[in-house]
Length: 322
Image (cartoon, rainbow, N blue to C red; front, side, top):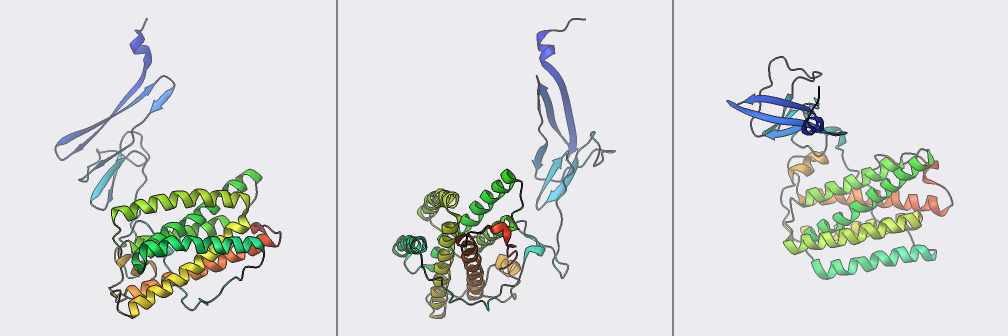
């Protein structure tokens, strides 16, 4: 039997039909040539009903899963996990889990400072001081916006360092001593600071544009710095965190003096740091400041390891230190 060219090109066609709300939802899967193109997920506003007889491990039907006010029809059976708080109430955050929350150690020594000794330390120290100047000029005493800008920068080093250590571990077939996870935890913690202050500070369009520019420049500079000298890169972050502690000290002074309203703490902060329900902005700034002090210690510690000619993998990473 002979087939036309068009019939030869079409290798397979499958059609999935899902009935919901009296209408039909059709989606085709096509494989052309040696490539198999699949469209697997379709989002709808109302919860669709699965066809009778469809199962999670069956190739014949889809499963539907609820997510907030939407549902997803998916062939793959990946169901969202519904989480609850310790008191049994529903957990409303999708960006972090209850197991990732903690109570910040606000008793940490906030006055620690690494005195720059060798010339590379001095370069790192004065480099961070120079970075502070444009922030002082642009934001002045608007500490909510200063905090927002600070966190967009502070969340970069952990991600860059963790990524480069990850690639190094793969190339050399060796463990990292937990430092990959420690640095990524730092990046995620800094990102949560930003998500918190976004509830307090409402950046204007040009301030968002500034974030784009600063993040792009700093990411690439820090990437190059970490490739060339991890010890200097970690020292830079150590000094950056010292400046962060100083900035949050001034933030608290402005709140105490009444220049910044001590508004109720955002809900995301109360859940993330396990704060009392009646917590205020001042309480949030205090726990964020404590986090920054912990990041200061970790990065100066990492730099000291490198300065002594050793590798991070030789020393267990301070996982969960903050």
